[in-house]
Image 1 (cartoon, rainbow, N blue to C red):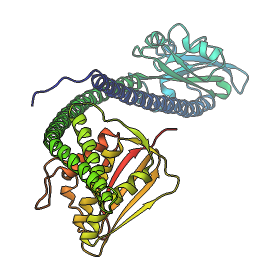
Image 2: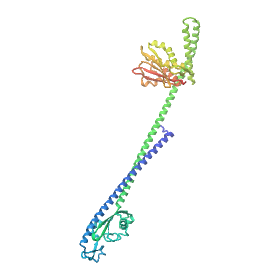
Image 3: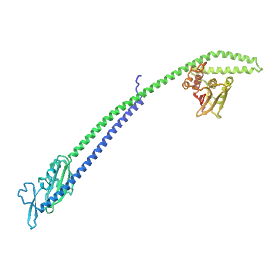
Image 4: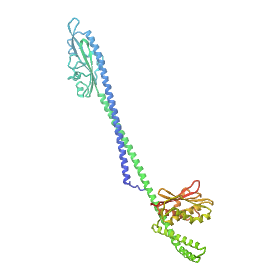
Length: 480
């Protein structure tokens, strides 16, 4: 099958579907990215809070230890050491019990039992003796230009310093947390201990977390893009297949219409040929019937002769109708009451039902609206339906003609009590030259269907339950 291009509307629909799929993929990736970033931010914030609490707890513990050591020094001061200033000690003068003033050397490093484990690369301890302008590390060295003292001056016990200030304190160039706690040394005064912790681990963890988010977003994007690509290809293939099926269905429908029109044209051509051939004998029969009327004038048989003339005229009009249809012109249509059509057909076909011993019953709904049709052709269509119903009905059965309005149409229903319809034959019975009768020509229902089409109506065949069939001629009602 040759692949046909999409129609503009179908092409637009495919493009819109592709854009919607792309937009959905982008939204999905952004959602994953936002959720990942929010999760990492929450984890980072919790880690920072835990680190701040840990440093605060450590500062409190060290202040307690520092206060205890200072109290011990105040009770039992060591002897003065002239090298105290050179060995990282801080000298404090206090009043002795005898009133004398003595100098108490305080070595900062010796104030903490685990001093060797406290001073780390990412975490340092600083102490501010009473009266000192700044803080000192455990070796007694100054802690820089007083960034910790500024924090104390603001009466804050916790804070955060910048990466540049962290470098001044001998820590890596990352923001640092600071926790300060006071230790009451009694006679040795109020000391302060500051614990400074670098956020390098937290920052690096954040970076690793963001890297994980980026990797997840990339993987999600790649997966979504691959899925979207294959989904779009599958969707486009389905649309293309549906498009090809629709085209094939349209071609098949067109071919069926052409075949039906061809069969109809053949049927009408045949009918016109038969009508042309029948025209001459009908003319001769009419002449003889008129002569017979004159010969039987004023006798009981005169009415029979005039009936022959009337039926010949009717057949001639039907023939003219078929000839007009075969030439492509619409037969003349007039307004007629459905009851008139039904009763006329009953009178025309009554003798056949009597011979077949089948009862014919006509039911007409009161106030059924008129129709605009060619009366002779519609009568012929109803005659064809009744002939089929009579042939299909067993002796002693009944055929009913119902005339009733339905919506904007008038229904002529012919109900018989025969063997019914085969499902596979229901549509084919309306085609020319198809018949299940041994002596059937296959033209009766086909002509009826063509008459219905010329009258803007339709013919349908359905099965009855438990047996029999219903042939329905639907005609549009006359608009007042």
